[in-house]
Image 1 (cartoon, rainbow over the protein chains, first blue to last red):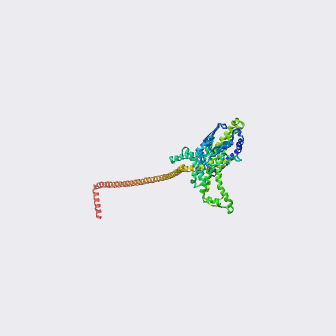
Image 2 (image 1 turned 90 degrees about the horizontal axis):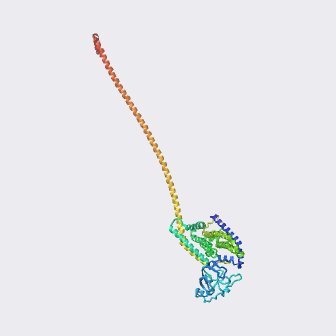
Image 3 (image 1 turned 60 degrees about the vertical axis):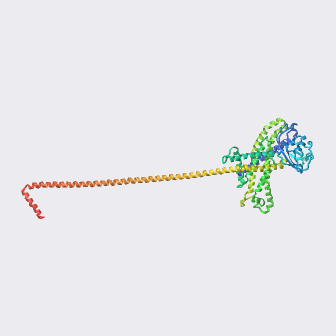
Length: 408
Length: 165
């Protein structure tokens, strides 16, 4: 197990290194291409649109760059709260409706809580809005984020970022929809598997149940048992859920044409998952776990002021690293795949369509290779997150026997 | 791209909610029954394995006992055969002895019979010889008594003899 773990670590490090070098090579391309706005393709914009969260599930665009441009996408519910306007719920498609409908629709749909003063939102004038911004009532959607209109417009800072206030945005975004999708998939899948177990009684598993069982046993026997020890059963539901959740979300991100989910490549998601691990570690930490942090054993008292802050930092470092690793790995994978695809269009935009066609075989070859690598990474990152969570739980519940052999 | 590393409150909220509900639902409807079934199956398998092991052990024991039984039977057969052989030898010896004794007895008897017969024959012979002697003597006497002188002399002599008694 120890060997396996260090192997994984090495693989992980290698993958990250490959990624870093690839990012260095291709990272400049999007910015370079961004400078060629006039040529009609902005790779940075395309990649950004993909990996960032959005208020709609966007499939593709017809007649791009032409007056009759049509976005084929699924609108999602926008749920907003602001002190000024209270709760507001509407479809994200409202942002893209024509200006003439806005006033009427908003007054019909929007509901304001009674205690907020009645206001007549000044309709933002589209001419005041920067390109790419869409307004609906007092809200402005700009670069996937919703802002409160100020005097009917958007105030941009010197760095191009809006200075407007943001409402509390609890919208069902693309990633939330993805999470719900993963939720439904996981629940149906495992409910069916559980039913199969209950129906068949004690027999060998069949079909897909067999695949699930292999993974469940992998989590139980390769992750939970060796990392946590005899108390593993308590943590097993969490570890299994987190493993399959991350794995499913990772895989969802690899399926093309379903809207390009990048759930585990969003820092909010990994932050939440890491926070769960952190909370469980703290809640289950026994006396010896805490005493190791606040009274490090076998250390002269003089060093306490130095060591205790380090130990406390370590406590927070663990979930922080957990959060960043998953986020960075998945995001980097998406960026690289998209960069390879973007290469075709960059070459096409720079040197004409022929160059684009000539680039495509190589680009596709690399994309396929990266997709295969991402399949491995999808599993590996779910495994690493679960394994590290299990190790942290193991440290929290471990009974330390202060013997001479105990070295820190 | 600083949007990339600034977590959205909404997503945190929904992730937390979805994950907690998922954790609860899966724990109740999936992990519990699945893990229970897996555990049961493992226990069943380990039980079956230990039972098989037990059976094998018992089989071995039985084999061992069978072997010892066979060995014992062989030993017993040997003993019985030996005893039978001994008995038969003894019987043969006894029969031989008996036969010898009988033969001896018969011989003895025959010898005795022969002896008796001989004695009888001898007695007969003696008697016959005696008779013959007497007859001869009578004949001689008759012949002698035919002579007067001689007859007188003999009567005198006999009378003398009787006087002496």
